[in-house]
Length: 98
Image (cartoon, rainbow, N blue to C red):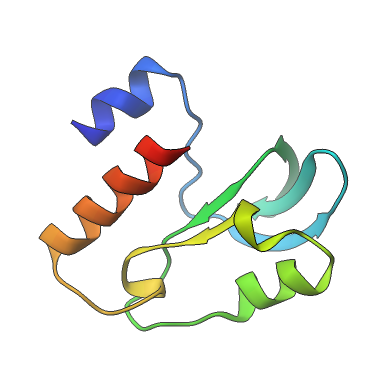
C-alpha cells in the first residue's frame, strides 16, 4: 500500500544516495550525492531510513543548520531497530501524517 501511495502522489524516492549537505529556508535545499553527481532537492520535509543500527548524525547535522525538528523524520532502523512490520507501519503512519 505504501508503494501505491508514493506512486499515486508522485513522491520522489532517492536510493543509494549520500547526504552531502543542506540549506535551510522556507524550503529545504538538500544536497545528495548519487554516483559522484551532486543533486539539489527542494523539499518541505526530509524522511530518512538508513542503515541497520540507530544513527542520528545526519538528523543532528540538519538540526544544527536550523532545520526545524518537525521537518526532519528519522524512521525504521535508523531510529530504532525493529522488524519489517514495525518499519512498514512507521513509514505508513509518517506518510499519512504528512
